Length: 283
Ligand SMILES: [Zn+2]
Image (tube, rainbow, N blue to C red):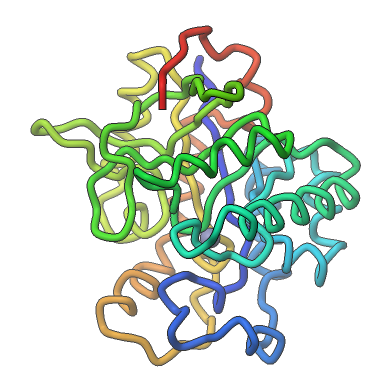
């Protein structure tokens, strides 16, 4: 039976990219932290279902909550990097990106006591034209990336990317790519890997996508955020569309996760990496 990847982007509710214009980074320190409780819910849930996961942690969060990173690692999960300060790659210069991924890796390795192999860009922001970020990741010692979302969406997406985990060949070396799961229907890739799609669309979408992965013999990659398990989080004054995407269906997350973890088996990305087929794709 195939083990899929259960992944968590560990960030606070006020660090969501869509809130950037309302919540400047300089204000982050003034917000109430709500991560401990929602992350505990996730860790309990995974423990009950005997599932492992990969936790992509924002460095800024790790520095303020070293205990949480240690709890994740002690529970047997993989700690990976979600950048230092949740800046999108599309808004960074290569040197700024390098500083961010280097600093996050250093702090997370120090806290978890294990090598940090993986990276996920905030808002899947390694988009066409930003492939230099993959070279920086290789140079900084990362072994895999999980940022190329093979969908066509305004603002993000790597539309022509492969849908299953694969190796990317770059001039300076190779890096594994582990894209969030999509569902192929009507000639298009539909996002079916988690997050808002998991809360707002029918549960059957994610289930069908993971079943398709099993038929192909490839692990799927599901993602969720701790703030999606926190229906009581303070509401920020954002546009109605952003409200729908971020506050819609929050009460559905936990029961749906129970169902998902009951129907499928999950593990950390690092565990399936050695089994990744040896085929190379040029990026
Ligand atoms: Zn994020």
